[in-house]
Image (tube, rainbow, N blue to C red):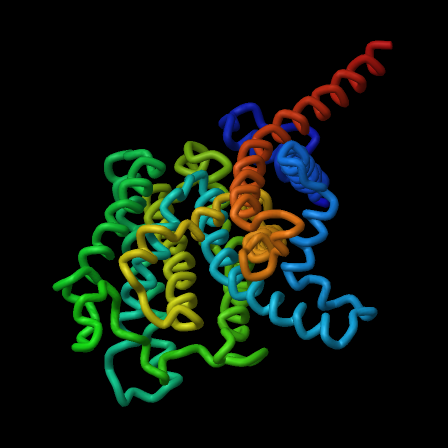
Length: 399
């Protein structure tokens, strides 16, 4: 558990103070947030005439996390392994899009554009992955992934540039860029679009060409034909390490944290705040773009216009980062939580006799919304607790 300083400098912004109070809450505040969100979800389940405990047990079983339990039968362990593989596949882009939000937060920016950056990264990754036949397999994977990183970074860099040059609010620009990415993708893969597949048998299907075999991420656990777990999970874990090193062991990380703490003070100390805005947003876009690339190269292998318009996965990155306190470990745990919820409430794994999967999916969205809502509440709770402590200390001194 991290500790906040006893006395806060008087010139901090409201956002900076909130960040300090959030860090002071350690893991207790996120834990309370999750418990309250699940309790509220349980009340909704109860209102529909179902048993909340049985429902959550069924959802947990669908996550595959019970695979670690030594008392499972061999048959149950096989089923749990299949479920856990799917959960970790979902957790991979959630980690990366969560980092895209968390890194921006540490610089005082709110990156709502992870969805658009994820889409742009996927678009360029599928283009590279489905082209250049004959390229060595490892090189093909690396180039396709780099395409997702670079173009996701450039896409987010637009918002950073506008923030730096014109002071444009990054929330507005990233939301607009989300919609731009969606409709650019729909046009690119739509009928007659420049990236629509060139297969004569699918001329009327608005979908990309399939990723070539050499550009697919290898599966290391499970059956590739049954969508086993690919090595993208290790890429996401490596990104967590990079995130931590960047923030805590580099000059850039020091500047990012300084700007997030107080832009005016950072500027006065000689830090180029505008440059940091651009760099941070570009790095965030690189994380999210890598998430899109990993999904395309790891299990989707193509992009259809319907996929672009309906996917909401990257938006969970906001809740992941907030719940994880914008830290590497917290982001990992938040991604696992939401990946488990998404997979555990899917039609594939949730027993409809316990709870209807269609309703349970909405339950996941509700818990996500409650986490985002309550995450700001614990700022107030921690503030009030610290205020009471200070008053008690002051009373003791006067007595």
